[in-house]
Image 1 (cartoon, rainbow, N blue to C red):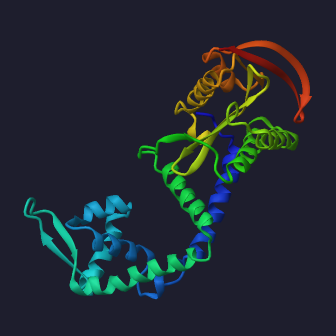
Image 2: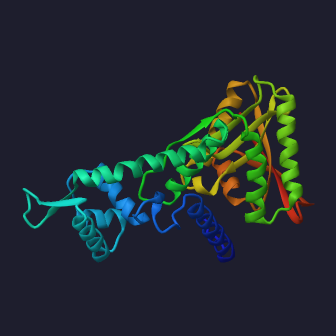
Length: 311
């Protein structure tokens, strides 16, 4: 796993805190009572669990919500005094008490549940379908990234959809600026390559694969015709979130498989000597370096390399 510089982590932390401030305002959790109710955010969250789960114990609830057991005990005691909650002995362990909402507790929670749902509907309704899809994909990605214990969603390789080619340009520009310090001329080069791909596209010899995980693009690779018998591999990228999954090798192998099926006899590519991970994958797949050239590009003195694979 690549180490993220401390300066970058500090910037990212500030950005996440900024989003937290925005979203807590947006959903109204800073008010004294959530959803115009007499309950706090934590109280509503506990009520939600009790309304949707059977036979919970205070210990289970504290662990799952990561609440201090003493604080939760006081909160449950207040619910019990207000007639919202009952505790019954477990038939399996007399030391355990199962928590259940009373009829009054369910009546009190039901309008909160409806109001929370309606507020989310009102927030989403102004967004077009494409924006709602992007939002849901982003939420799934956040949940996956911040839940390392959960198995990540599988990554599939697919043809580009609307917006994907713009993602390829933006992602190359952002990633290479962050990791190698490349300037905007690199992003401009990627944009020209993408534009040429669209303009000259021939399905018999050209292909683009987008790596997709739960609706979020995490990688790309292109194969384009250079001549009748020679193809060129271009715009190979694996997002940092998908590194270590074997995705890079999958993308390169998919490219080679298509090139053989399309009747090409050779694949060429141009890379830089500092792109060690990509060079390792090319070598693993059977490519060999055939030429090097020093050049000044993207704001740096670089060593370009030409690699080839005989098919």
